[in-house]
Image 1: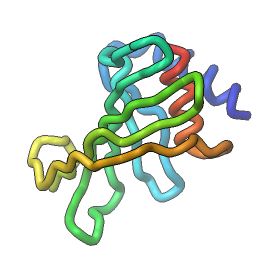
Image 2 (image 1 turned 180 degrees about the vertical axis):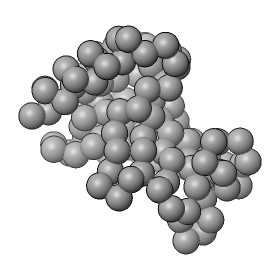
Image 3 (image 1 turned 90 degrees about the vertical axis):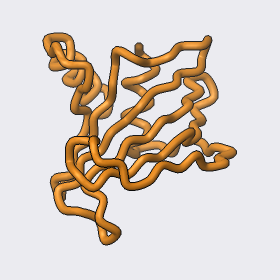
Image 4 (image 1 turned 90 degrees about the horizontal axis):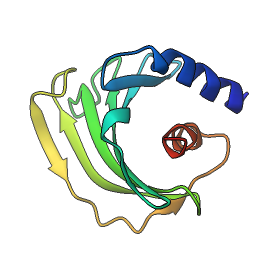
Amino acid sequence: MKKLMTIIFFAVSASAMAEWIKWSESPNGDESFVNMEQIIVQGYIRIFTDRKKYHKPTKSGEQSVENRYELDCHNQFYKVLQVSGFTDDSWKTLKFMLDPEDDGRPIRPDTAVELLADIICQN
């Protein structure tokens, strides 16, 4: 199933012209996007940006977030480099920006993170 979703993703994204490609939609309507044109590749390491647009604002008022990640495709490990929250759904009105001290974590199987890692690591 995961491989089929990845194949569908690449079939759809190959014809898309925009930088931001929708890679996921949750059952509650939250949409996730990744910028495939600005992935930094350093050996097995990928540095990339992911965006999420919430179907409904969060309790603290964010309508969208942008996250910067470092992903180790060989060791299946990732860490968060930066988190930005926005009060609008178009990533323009910044509410906060955090640079967490993240030691990272392994990618768990059968999760959205694993699907995103598969997409990013094939780039």
